[in-house]
Image (tube, rainbow, N blue to C red; front, side, top):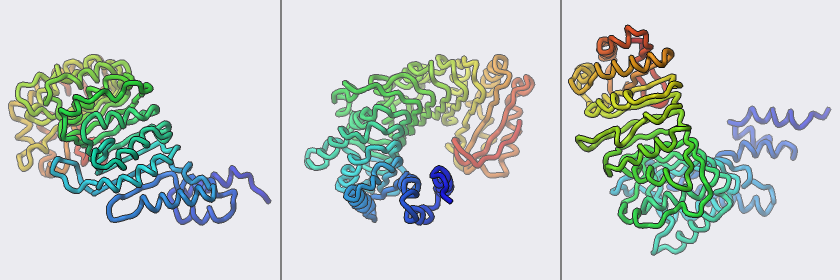
Length: 418
């Protein structure tokens, strides 16, 4: 009895995470080949150090082209990584060598259906005077049809010559909706500022989600050009972590205000390296009236900026407010004692939370801190300290939760109701 092909496809879909079974299915009959290859080649991971992954993938694509099997069209998610470093700095020596980029560039020009691209721990350049081959390859990549389908770009610990090279790269993706840049680095900030704009003549890019985690103050330069053409102001999620006081320019504030009409989720973990910085001039949430979730935090030495953000929140759709307590900035110190210090203005925070509760009776407030920086013997004392510090909010019936987690964005975590 012959079964309809839809049943075969459905059955093979259950094997999406079993490569051996999928390879066996692809050799069973020709009718099973498309569904098997869809899962086998959907996600491809390449490593540049100690392997020949790029050469092997390139050979596979060449064989597929000769046999006309179309493997290249099944690849949707490409993850390329160099050395296993945590982040890049000017002294980092474990970067992906230039020649390792060459086969990757050749591969990218052929992947016309890739939608998700991740590059980690690499030195990427669009121009390099002494290496004309690299220069030619990256220029061909920028003009390749590969870029027209890409919707998600993730760059982690990737170094460029300057900020404009990153702008040119990002601006080449007309369908990009998710941009995730963590710990970028470029040594020549002055040179980047003098280069011509990389967005001129480009199609409009409508980012829905932006993640910037920055340790070298490069994110401030990114915020400047992300507020200009070709990027349209339609962000729904913004996750920003890094210093905003280096240039003293309110570029993050302009980014927030420009996308205020669409922003629904905001996560701000800010570092203030300069004393006396006027926080509201640099970052302000007062114009973001459609926020559903908000997460704010900073180092304990700048904890008063939490009050600045709270006092200017005017979103009537806010459902959850998360305040991260940077107790990991004080390793070895007694957490509850740090929380009771004068710089933690709990009276002001208590008043602002009560005001929010009057307008938002269903609001949940979560105080979050890293569990790795807090011994278990402190947790009870910290919960009691927090409860005693917010008497007005507790009396008003505001739901207050203390969360101890390994990561601010994901679990596992433990919650205690105040």
